[in-house]
Image (cartoon, rainbow, N blue to C red; front, top):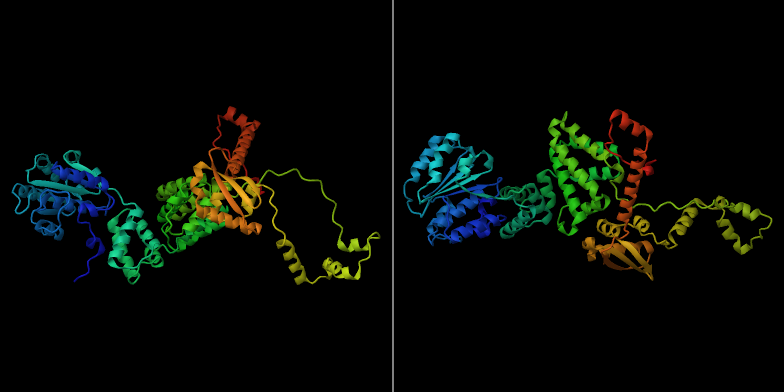
Length: 560
C-alpha cells in the first residue's frame, strides 16, 4: 500500500477529533442537533487550521444515512464516500483555478437539480476570495434564495476581499490559529499511534515552527521522521529547521546585559556570515523575550520541556521586567522598519544598538549594593614582620617558635608554600553574615529559579541555622518547593552547614532586594530630574528657545 502523508492520514473525520476549534464545533453541533440549518456557511482563517476539514465533516453531518446529526456514523455509504472524495453530491471547487463567471454559471446551473443519492447537494468553494467580481455577482441570487436541497460552504484565508454583499448572505465562522502547546499535544498523539519515538523538546520546536497551522506541523513532522531516520529527536529537528545556531539569541541578550557593544556587533556580523535572515532573527528574539517575561511573571506557565528552559530562567533573573518589555517593543519596531533601512544588516544592528542605548545600566538585575557607610578612620599601617622581630622590646623567639617565625617571613618562604598558606587562610573560616540579605544574595551562587525567589524575599530572622523569610503574596508562585530547595542548597553551600528555611507570605510591602533596587533607581531618577530642571542653562533654554526636556536618564556612577 502506498505511503499516505500524516496530514492526510490523520485528518479529523468527526467534530470530536477536531483540535482547537471548540467555538466552531459547538455552534455547528447545536445547529445540526436542533435542525437549524443555514443555506450558506463561510469559514475563514489562516492556512492549515481546518477550514476544508470542517467543511467535509459538515457535509457528512448533512448527508449521513442515519439522519442529520452532529455525530455522523462514518461507516455508511455517504460518510465513506465523502471521506474518499467520491460522493457524487459533494462538489469541491478551487476558486484559485476556477475564477471566471463561466465556471460559476456551470455550478449554479447544476445546483437546480435534485441530489442524486444524498440528502443535500453540498458545494465547497475553497479560496473563494479569488473569484472575479462577475462570478461573485452571479452567485448573489442563488446565495440569497437557494433551492432547499443545496448548501454552500465557502472557505477563505482572506475574507477582506469578499464583497460585503456575499458576506451578508453567509453564516461566518473564524477558525483560530493553533497554540503551540495544542499542536505539540496532537503531534504526541500521532507519534504514539504511529509507534515512532520522539523527544518532547523536538515536538515543541516543530509546533513553534508551524506558526499555528496543524497541517504545516504534520508536514514538518513527516520531514523530521525522514530526517531523523524514523526518530524525532531534538538535535535533528534543530538541524532540519536550520535552528541549530539559535544560541546566538542568548549571546545577544547576554551581551546586552553586560553592556558589551563590541560583542553585540561581532555577534551580528557572525550572523551575517552565516546568512541568518535578520527579519526571522528579530521575530525569534521577540518570541524569546516573551518567554522570558512569562518566566518572570508566571514561571509555572513555562513548560518543563521548553527548549533551553534553564537559560530562559537564568535570563529572567538577570533582566528586570521593564527592560524585557522595552527590548520586546524595540524588536517589534525594528522588524517593522527593517525594509526602510539602508540594508538589512544596518537595520538589525541599529535595533541592537537601540537596545544598548536605552537603559544600558539597568539591563542587569545585579543586586543593589547597600549605601556606603562612612569611611572609618585610617588604621595604623601594619608593621612588617621583619621589623617586629628586630624591635628592641620584642622578646627573643624560642627555638620551638622558630618555624612559625620563619613561616611569617615572606622572603624566606617558598612560593608554593605561600600559595597553600593563602588558600588555607581564605577557605578555612566560615563566612560571617552581617544581616544584609541583599548583599548575601549577591554573594550566593544561585541558578535562575533560586535567584528569582531570593530577589523577592525579605529576611525576617536568622538564628540557630534557621532563616525566616517573607515573600509578598503576589509572588506566591515563587515559593514552590523546587525553588526553595535550590535556595536552601545554595545557602548551605555558602555557610558550610545545613540551613533551614521558613518562608511565609505577607500582604504588606516587603523590603526585598528588588524593592531596594527599584527604590534606588527611583531616587537616582528623581535626583537627576531635580538637577536638570534646576540647572540655569536648562531653564534659560526652555524660556528663551522654547525648548523642552525629552528624557532624563541618570548616569551610572559605577561605570566610572
